[in-house]
Length: 235
Image 1 (tube, rainbow, N blue to C red):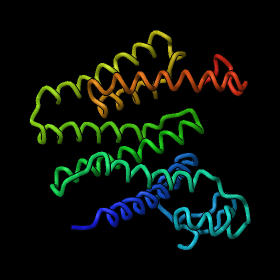
Image 2 (tube, rainbow, N blue to C red):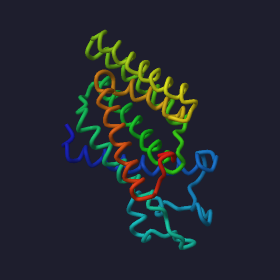
Image 3 (spheres, rainbow, N blue to C red):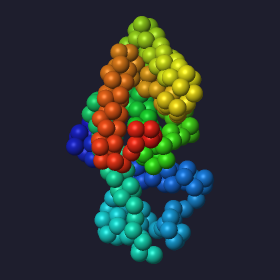
């Protein structure tokens, strides 16, 4: 048995490494570049060596600047790395997977989904777009979890509720999109709603949607009060 402290440390470090990859993935999605190839500075395009790619530590050691061109490195990089590591640890503590192959598989799928959510959060924040390349794999992984969970709890009712949760959530948001002709919400939100339904299941999807609307309203009001956004602007 591996001591939990060592296991959590490994999961955190693994999360940092995944966060570094997610940063690379987002940059290459933004610039339509392939994921393959060596990492490089987005400003001077100089190839980065291994000492430049240590998650968080390289940023601190270089004092937030490129070693080659001295341009500032975006805070996105260490923040995404750090929070991905923290999220991975929290997912492990929440799921508390056993040593069974089924439990470990569900745990890994959850890590994959939360990695997708990190990309969705940052990409949507910067571009107001929920990329299909990320949300469709998250939906597929959620459906896999629903299927595998059925073999754990053997509850056909839970299995059915989880599937219907995604379906009805999709239909509800699609109707808003359709009748508002895309002005109320974008279709990316419709796809994301379907993901939420499958991933959270019933009745947790109701709680998720409730807090989504509340948080959206609060953040929107704050941005309007600060005159950062207008009443008709996208958030």
